[in-house]
Amino acid sequence: MAVCIAVIAKENYPLYIRSSPTENELKFHYMVHTSLDVVDEKISAMGKALVDQRELYLGLLYPTEDYKVYGYVTNSKVKFVMVVDSSNTALRDNEIRSMFRKLHNSYTDVMCNPFYNPGDRIQSSRAFDNMVTSMMIQVC
Amino acid sequence: MADEALFLLLHNEMVSGVYKSAEQGEVENGRCITKLENMGFRVGQGLIERFTKDTARFKDELDIMKFICKDFWTTVFKKQIDNLRTNHQGIYVLQDNKFRLLTQMSAGKQYLEHASKANFR
Image (tube, rainbow over all chains, first blue to last red; front, top):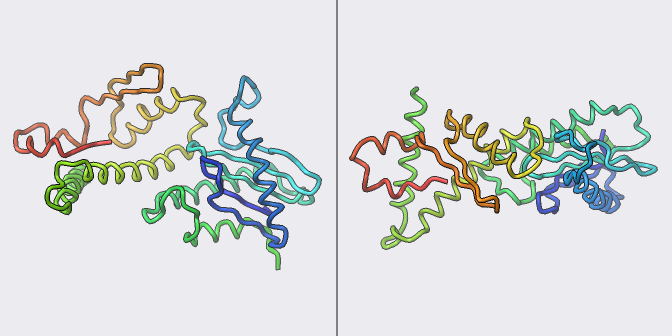
């Protein structure tokens, strides 16, 4: 269960960003923004054999004391960033991967929608919203 | 197969439809071509998003070109690009000797005058 999910365009501006506990939204926005540097480092792969896996899933970007940030990049250079609660240790790598898979599938559906202009914010897609809600922590 | 003929007809109608809906005197300037190109670009974006969903990450430009010439072209047009040339400075020329959307038109003399309108990107 994620605490914050963000979709970042190729030019590094957010297409969609949503956090679950809505009080601290700015903190999550800031975390996503700083994680973009790490994402860029991983995609540039300057001679580092470790990152040479040619995978879309980037793994853990950086951990803070409360949260962990995971990244995923598509082949069109659209990045997905997910912030999860550190106390939620039950989340394994496979689950994060499958969550990114679902995100990618929903994003592809949004792209194929002829009424959506690439580069706009993802605002009117209910299916995408529902999918993201299902992945976030339910805070009542 | 039946679906191919349907798509060819739709494609040809699109070209003539865009030209008909243009105002008088606009047939020669580039606006119709731009409209068609933008349509093609948008469709291409959606297709690419679907196809690259499962492929490995591209390491460099050459990877991207290889993907376009082989996987993408095979999936859309059922054949590969015949010739890829580059000047190693960012320009790539893709050559398809038997472009599927045009073979029906280029075979006969009927459509020669309209062939110049069909602009494919």
